[in-house]
Length: 182
Image 1 (spheres, rainbow, N blue to C red):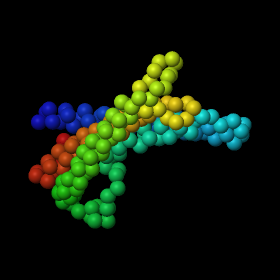
Image 2 (image 1 turned 180 degrees about the vertical axis):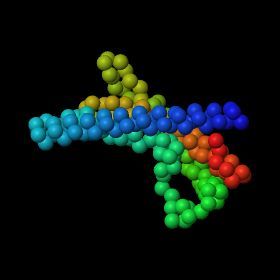
Image 3 (image 1 turned 120 degrees about the horizontal axis):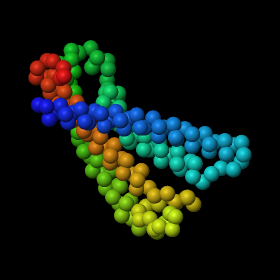
Image 4 (image 1 turned 90 degrees about the vertical axis):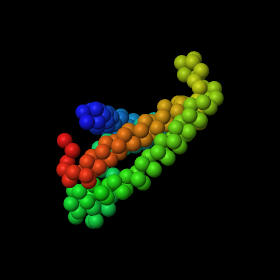
């Protein structure tokens, strides 16, 4: 049981850490978009990297923060029905809906991996600082590689899946014993 609790603690702390890191990613994205808007509309000198960087940063945030949101159970649910039930009944409902959750996350991880891997292995032909970069590159003049951002989809899916396992364990414990797991 101690190993299981240690696993749950590691997953929880990892998702909390990643979620807090995403605050900085969001702030960086806000800074970049503010810079881009000022350059575009005040100085009439738009950048070729600002808009694309902002999209990359928000994509990273969106993917990586999924496990953090699931730690707090912040994803959408039908609260009208769910909130009026006892904790044990909610655990049974969560166990039932976890079938769909895990089906979704497994398909998401699988397709994200294929999406990432095809991007990683694509011959890009770009160079950064004189070094040839493998993988899919952006079509802009800046040409940043796409695969690091696409890898965040895989990482975010894995973190979401692991947080789902933690909640599954907690829900099973609640459904069987009627008590919160400590």
